[in-house]
Length: 260
Image 1 (cartoon, rainbow, N blue to C red):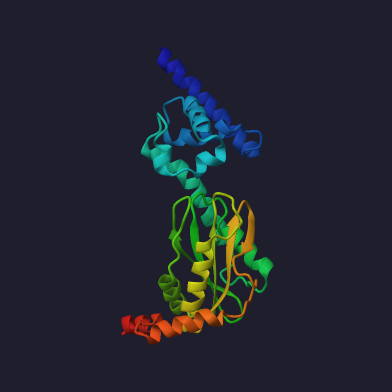
Image 2: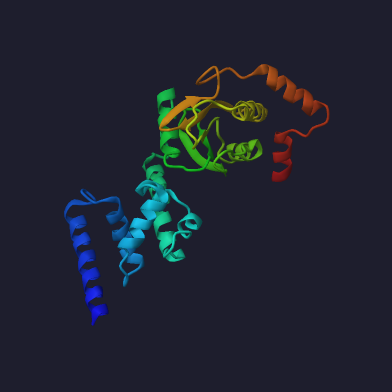
């Protein structure tokens, strides 16, 4: 009998949460109530209020909870895989939704447009992500590709992969971007080195590296000292060509050989 009353009470509370949402969206919802509303669909016959509070206490906030990975979420007592996947979906869906709002042929003709695009692309990423944005000769976005997803402290850039996609999309130019989840807007030595290597590799394919954008704490800066539309670093290009002539196989040759 007591169990039936508890089930009725939980059902009534969930119904009231749904009615509030239908009337005003999430306006006025406490963070734990948002989680209660969501978890009610994954755990239909259990009071999820204590679990919602545990999640907020464990991660510190609603956005940290929804940004957590499935594995991190499952470390919280009472949360199984099914519910963890549901919660982890929210940040991923948000990023997909934001990306879908970007017109496939959006024009990135100035620094403001480039930085805005990169900020939206990397919004909410808790670990480092490295993207390449491929542009036509009219600076239209042909494709945006996630090249690598790294740890909280580092991500490897892959010139070979970036160049491969440049050929695949017949790109005239490329913008690369990545984030620093730690909040530092200061490009690291690795950031500068990867920019130089990327510039050299793309030049071999006659594709321009327009800029390398670093994003942190909702702000964006250029890793390239000369800013948007810089001149190619001819010294680095010359070194790259010298290394190739000394016996290294060029990327362009590798790609052509693979296509054959």
